[in-house]
Image (cartoon, rainbow, N blue to C red; front, side, top):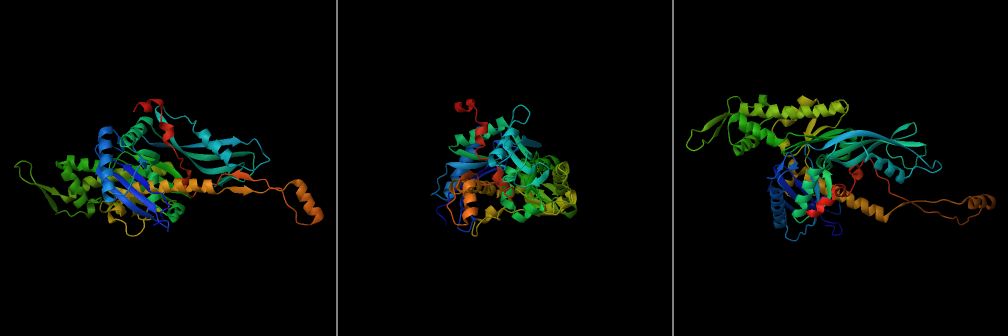
Length: 456
C-alpha cells in the first residue's frame, strides 16, 4: 500500500442509513478500503437533516463501527454528501469583454467570468452551492472546451448553477461539527454517485445517473463530457415502503421486508397465485398478501419516479437518441427486481445497474460493492481529486518563455547561439472539462458560514 497517500473519509448522511467509509489509493490508483461503519438514520427525512440530535447520535454510531473495523484509524475531516428536494439547478449565460487584447486569454479571466455568476439572482433563503462552466465561446467560435491560450475580444460560457437552502446546509454542518468532525467539503450527492459508477466511456457516450435512495432520487445527466443537468426528485425507497404499508395494511418493518424479499417493479412478472403470509397482530389471524398486489404498488411508485426522470431529460432536450450510454441505476432502491425492464420501458433508454467497484481495488469487503454505497465511495474519490489537484498546483506550473526583441534580432544577424532573456510567467494549471469533479469548487463550507454559526 502507498503510505504517502492520505486517508480520506466519506460520510453519507442518508434518509435510511448513515455510512462512513475510509479509503486510500494504492500504487495502481485504486481505492483500498481501510474502515467501514454504518448506522440506521433517524433524524433525516427526504435527504434533509430535521433532528440534529438524532443525526449526531447516528453519525457517532457509524464512526464507532468504522473504528471497530480498524482501531488504527484516526478520523478528523470528512467529505459530506448533500441532497434533498431543496437542491435546484439552473442554466445561465455569462460574457466578458476583455481589457488587454494583445495577450492570450488567461485563467484569471475565466475566474472572473465564474465569479460573476455568483451574483445571479436566486430566491431569498437559497445559496449558490456551485457554478460549473460548460461550453465556452470566444468571439464567434463556439463549443470550446478550454479557452485559455485563445485570443479574442469577448469570452463567454454557459453555466450550470446549483443552489440549496442555506438552513438545510447549516443543519448538515452543525450535525457534523457536533459529532467532533470537520467538514472538509460538501459534495452534491448525484455527482458523488456518478464519480463512483461512471467510467470515461460513459462520460463520452452520454448517460443519466439515477441514484434511488431512501428519501430522494438523485439525477445527474452527462452529455459530450459535460454535466448538463442535475435534479433531486423527492421520492425514494421509503415512499414505496409507506405505500406498501398503507395499501396492504401491514407494519412498516413488514412492508420493508416484503419489498426486499418478494418485491418486483413489474406486476406482469409477479406470479398471480403466489401469496405471502404475514403473522397476525396480538392473536389476530395471519394475513395473506398477494405478490401480484405487492408488485402493482411498487410499479406504480417506481413508474412515477421514472416519469420524473423522463421529464427532466426532456427539459434539457436530451431524448433517447442522444444518450448512447442510457440510464445507470444506483443507490439502495436500484436493487428491486425487474427495475431495469421498467426503466427501459418508461424512459425508452437502455438501462443497467451501476456498482461502485469501478475504482475499488480487489479484495474489498463484498458489502461495499452494493449500489447503496455509491455516494460514499464517490465522496472519497472527490477528496482524492481535490488532493491531487492541490499537489499539481503546488509542484508544477506552465512556464512560457519569451525572447526579447533585441535577442531575436541578434540571432538573425549573427546566426549564432545566444543566451535569451527568459521571462517566466506563472499560469495556473488548466482544468479539464472532461473531469467534471475538477470544476467542483473546494471549500464550499465557507459560503454558508455566517456569524450566527459561531454561537454553536
